[in-house]
Length: 117
Image (cartoon, rainbow, N blue to C red; front, side):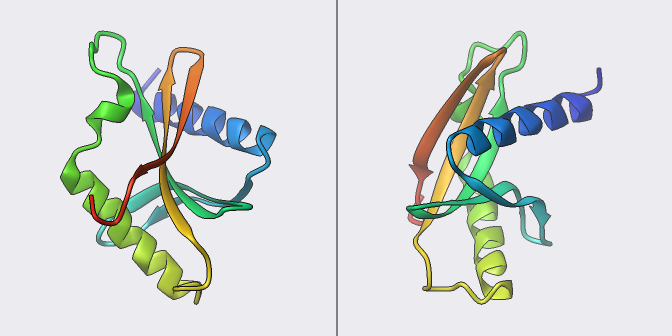
């Protein structure tokens, strides 16, 4: 299975998890020149910009630990563009979450980082 196929399966698992926990999925794979967001969802707390990370088979590092500062900045930049495009700036609370997938285990980490990251 290719890395892309594995990534797609991981995102599909993340979407299933989010739906089971009451999230509305707004968009998947939102791309801009500045960055990409894997999943944009909404729950009662506001809009969630969610990065999905999967553990590589031979890695000793947790998936959520692989998100470097540069990647966070790109996600935040893409989120700003999404909010502007959808005329949502300042209208809803926004959160940056991570879903870490390690085999069959899914770990949802709300508010994993902030705009100040």
